[in-house]
Image (cartoon, rainbow, N blue to C red; front, side):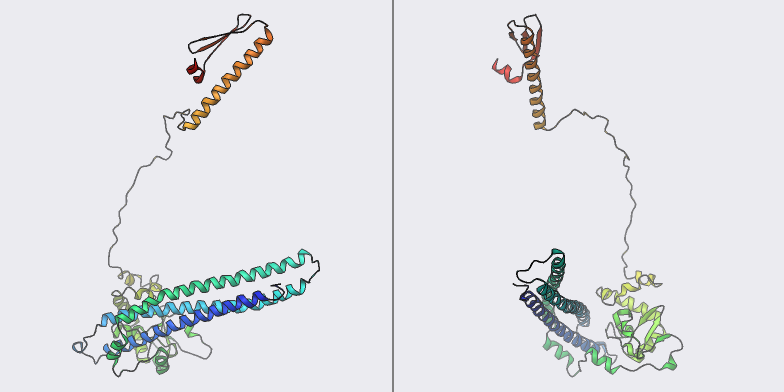
Length: 398
C-alpha cells in the first residue's frame, strides 16, 4: 500500500529537502558572520599598517589582530568547504529523487492487485528501489555529519567575539570604510599594461579563459602586500593578470603590486617564507606546502630551524632460535592430566575384564583373586596369573 500510494518518496525527499535547507541556512549564517569579521580585521590592519602611520602612533595589538585575521580566514575557508559539500549533496539528491519516483511508478504499474507476477520481473525493480533508498539515506547521514561539524565550529566565533568585540573594532576603524572581497576585486579590476610585460611571463584574462581555476600560490592572496604591509592578507584579482614564474602562478591585489612583485619574484618568495615562520597557521592557509618539492626546497627548509637528532642503533637477534631443552611429554594443563589419568584407568580396567572373561571360558575352575599391597593378582584354574597395579581409588578402599 505504501509503494502503490507513493508515500515513501513523499516522506524521504521532503525530510532531506528540509535538512538541506536547515544545513545550508546554518552554514550561510556562520559564513556571513565569519566574513564580516574577516573584512573588519582586514580594514583595521590595512589602516594600522599604512606607510603613513608611524610606529609611535600605533599602540594597538597588531600581532594579535593578525593572528585573529589568519584564524578567521582559515575558518572561512573551512566553512566554504562545508558549503560545497552541502551543495554537492543537494545535487545528488535532486538527481536521485526523479529516479526513485520513476522506479516506484513503474513498480506500481507492474504490481497489480490479485495478479501473479514472475519474480524475474519484479525483483529488479525492488533492487533498484532499495539502491536508490539507501543512497538517499547516505545523503541524509552526510547532512547530519556536516550539520554536527557546523555546530562544533560555533564556539570559535564566540571566542573571537570575546577577544575583539564589535564595539572595539568599530573604535579602531573610526571612519575607515570596510570593504568586502568583492568590492576590492571590483576596484582593482584593471589589466596591467601589456607594454610592461617583456621581462616575465603573464597570463592575461580573455573571454574564454578560466584563470580563476588555476592553482594560485598563497591560496590566491597577494604576496606583495603580505611582504610590504607586515603580513596583511588581501585577495588577489586574476583579472589584473597572473604572473607565471617557475611554473607557478601568482595573483595580485593591484597593478602596482603585480609589477613590483614581477621585478624580483625570487626575493619576494623568500621574504614570504621568512615572515611565515612567525605564524604556523599560514603554512596551511597560504598553501606553502605546495612549494616544498620545487627548486626552492632549501628556502622552505628554513621554516624548520630545529634540528632533528638522529642516531643509528643495532641489535643482535637469532635468525632461527631453537630451544634445546624441550620436554615434549610435558603437560601444564591440570584438566588434561586428569583426562589422561581417567583414560589410563579405563584402559587397565577394560584389559582386566577381557582377560577374566577369557579365563572363565577356558577353564571352568574357580578364579581366585588375591590382593597383596598394591598388586591385584588373579589365579586361574590352570595356574595362569595376571598382575596389575590397582587404581588409586581401589587402593584407598583396600
